[in-house]
Image (cartoon, rainbow, N blue to C red; front, side):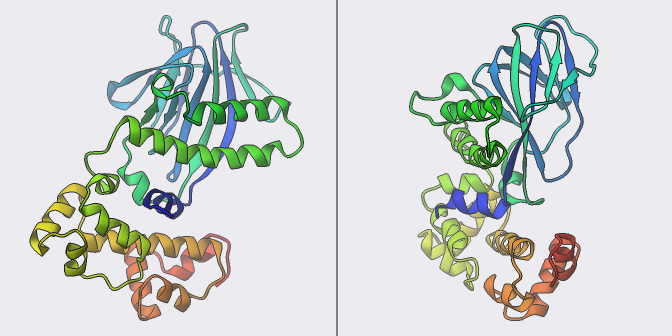
Length: 304
């Protein structure tokens, strides 16, 4: 498993495809701020539209483009014609996806869904307010257009097992979006930027590979072939956090996954993520998330 795989796994990302929009004429549709841990996305199948973001930013979307809002920011989708007040489209049920329409005829055709992830995820914290994957910048061999085509086909045909297939494909969609984002917009800071640094990436990948190891600054600096002081300075400047802080966050995200999806005892989870005692693990977990591991687990519907 490479570092990006690990970060996506730690974020516990799951995808869903929820709606299809077919809009014609002049229209505007308001989207409220999404709940924490939810990142809406829009895939343009045909036509064009405008997206108005907080702070006055505006984006133009065209066929083949994919927009993801990692922080779930409030936004307005609107036609490229005259500005009109936001209103509610008519909703048509019956297929795999509910269909929402403004007008009739050819125009904008949009698939919409969301990525659900572990709140306070390192990966999502390092992503910008919006990711715009430009379809025109994708290479002919890129799998994203084929994946979108398959999603559209499954939604249209609505055959047996279509919902399961769509859910699986949307989870894969996130990984391909991240891959395309890194190719189109290389990061200059944050945990993803560490992976692009030839020396610092060796230390960061070691942490991700063996988070339960008792890492020292000296050992990590040695992996990066840097002095202790230079390593600490460079790592913290690029990532915005110290190596120890990121190590703790990796351990806590692994613990969240185990608490959410396994019946492992708390002492076993503590040992798995590098703590010598359940008490030490509980103290750090509570400081990080504001609740004890057992309380967190009960909130996930799993009994300790």
